[in-house]
Image (cartoon, rainbow, N blue to C red; front, side):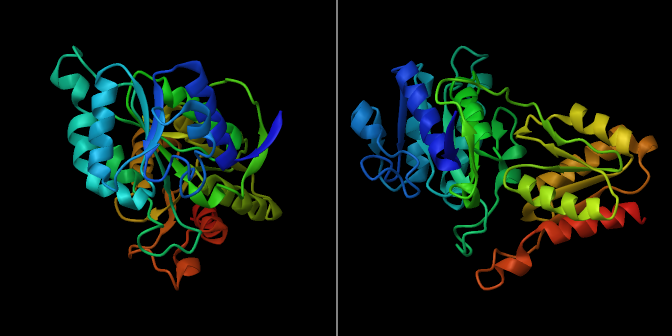
Length: 325
């Protein structure tokens, strides 16, 4: 297997999909010859031509509206929103059109072939408008799938699944891992099932749940806990809509404790849904309340990013609160 970073894995997945099916097209702001602001689409226009990899105007609502139209006609559009923070002008198209297309026609027509890629999250000193984690806004929307990979191997397999899944998928890429996460990735076609969590590390004392770049944060916290003799089970959700509540519940019933670690602000984040479901399904097994480690309830600060961030120390403190309750 080749060594790839997360960006290269994304590029490889797009290359495989475009070679596999000529109805796959890639478009967005600067994705053509320039290769995208992060270079995720480098070389695709040269290889597949301007009709299948091309730039759009700087209008996010138009990008997704155009993608909805293509998908409704049986194509597999992969639309890039340059930053997760820029997705909000397209919110109406995604929530009121993409997610509902199938249902308003009784499945006479749908946009199931649509995939929306967007980098999200902090850690790159991007300030207010290039650092947000907006996944919870969309997780409240029936009709979508939301997928968030944690490393290059996961990114390629999940993206290939997303592109050919019969449902529209919002594929959120943790941009601080784009070049930081490196691993072995098959160069050919492979898929990873959507909606299925992975137990990254088995443990007996506490279950810690996360997704995306936060999984690496959890692993560092687990190393600190291990020095205290604490055995941490780590679960990567991989998909947050639908999310694998059964795997999480099974783990919590074993360990008796649960921590959710997330980058997004604390209030009304997706971790709240995870915590509520654990409480419903595992109440009689819990030795302590479900704890959360989160970002702060403020706009994402440039000068105080380190203080804002839900790092391994905050997650470690949440693990200790759970154990010492």
